[in-house]
Image 1 (cartoon, rainbow, N blue to C red):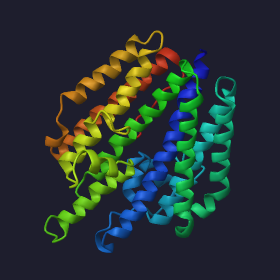
Image 2: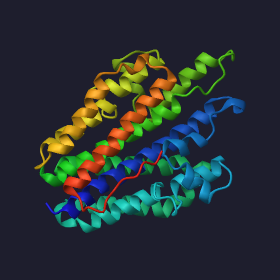
Image 3: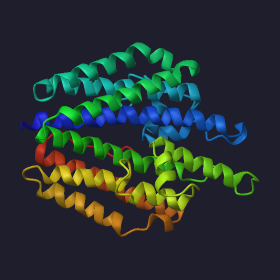
Image 4: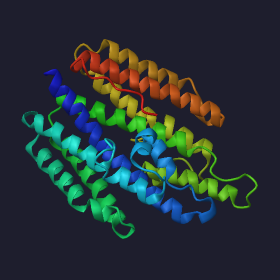
Length: 316
């Protein structure tokens, strides 16, 4: 496979995943803000930190309020990580590799992009936000499901799977890193119930709340949620599941030695740590290690399979 084709398919998958993840974050945060007392509500700034776009946000917006942050994350053309920008980039990558992808995938992605473009103004309003975000999430899932059901299991499929799961693993660590910090004062009477609400929002950001309650526990606790989201091998958005999928995809490529060593070193680091026992500071440091591992793995893939000019910078 040509290096440019491999690169475009990889980024196509990452951008679609990024758009869906951003939509999930906004939707869950909207509900979390409504469910917590106004004086201690978590606000909207954490979403800028989760996406790693703090510096970029501060160059285009003055106040970190709901209106500005939602606009920045949904439709700001100057934000390469906004939903609209991510889908535009995915569409462009798909357009250049249409000959190796099912025709229906181009049609579905084009439909999703046009939906986002035509409804972005409605998505910026409180009354239209949920419908817009639901459309982005369901459209992204339909595209991924379509590719999974009809795409030939050749190198193009493997690069798509690698890109999607690497992006997902990165977002999982970012959500946990920002959302696991203490939002509510310990001396508050409602502190324990609010902490539970916080961890429920973490699970819902990854569509994991129902699965957690079925397979882990009815009661939501920090230790159990961390173990579930880092170490569970069967939950599709756990860090272990994501990097295992990346491992499997890389293993099916030619010349995979360097990248394979990188992903397995990352898995080993994860297995050696019981995240549930880490303090908040230790958890933050460990997540930094994992995120650096993701960047190193991307750069290893780029050096082996993509044009040499591609390099991923650390964003947060």
